[in-house]
Length: 460
Image (cartoon, rainbow, N blue to C red):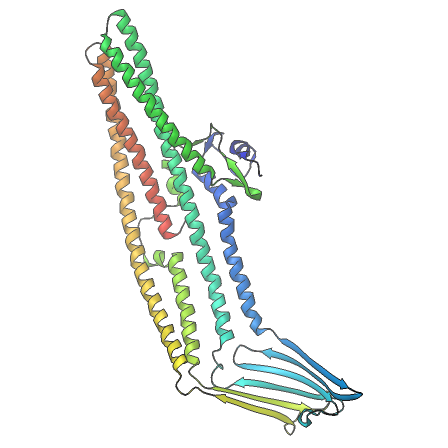
């Protein structure tokens, strides 16, 4: 079982990333680990490797081929036959194949048409598909589709990596949100504890009534309960974050207790994610890997349709071979072997059906491309509006928090001077906590919107 390595040791020792503080894990550093070491990111790289091997396999249809066919029969001292047929074939891009052949046959019961001179029979010729398979054939289309598949695999790889980065980024944002909420509850728990101690002292001195000590105690217990709930959320989010932290050799990392997220992420988010997109254009949409994948699939279907159209033509295969009795004799037109093979289905039902199905698939992918373009454009537009709205909400809440802080300070001062009530102080403080939590939540929503925009663009 692989041992877990604490991330703090690695952050201190590693020269790959620069840290602002020993116990702060910034979004940029975190993404660096995910992109470089996460197993799913590494797995996505296998997609392009697989497509390259499939391309190599399709190119094998154009490999020259050496064939040797030898057979011999001897029975009761009689040589029935001894046959040797060796050939070398070179397929070409179009429906043309070159072939060199050597035959040497002998035997008592050899078929006369297979008789060859004593030194064997050499031939050199060509096989041509004059109709079906001349300009378009199966091996040609397969190779072109394999090349398109390489590009499709690259687009698919981007989509897979984009998805894992999106979930990893949102996990960091969730960790940051829970950490900030814990800080808020921890701070006001300490305030409630200090206030309880002060109220008790004032009660003993006769300055405050006993009911104030009870209210201060209840308030302290409420803050303590809120803090414990926040700690649970922080622990869970920290463990979720650890799922995306790995080292070389697939070695998982875990966060130490003192490791914290970067509270200044709001100031760096656009630089780290490159999310400052102001408008949308056709180029931005067309560069989306999902659309590129669909476009490449359309090109592959166009090739398939071309092959199905070519299948409507008749099969007319012509062969011509020059013959020579030895390898030094010049080939001439008086010695030859030729052949012609023709076939044509009368109704072409299979071929016509295949062509219609290919056309339907092409129409289907065109509808898919059109629908995805509109969806992407609208999704980007709505996400940009979300970002604008959450930015406005965040700025409003910043000012609201400042106002509530002033209000709470004023109320505490009045209470200290004996002019206010503890109930009013607690009420003001509750409203302050609510506004701070709303600010944290709006920041989280703003971060999510920015990452969602890059997820739609597949630009993470």
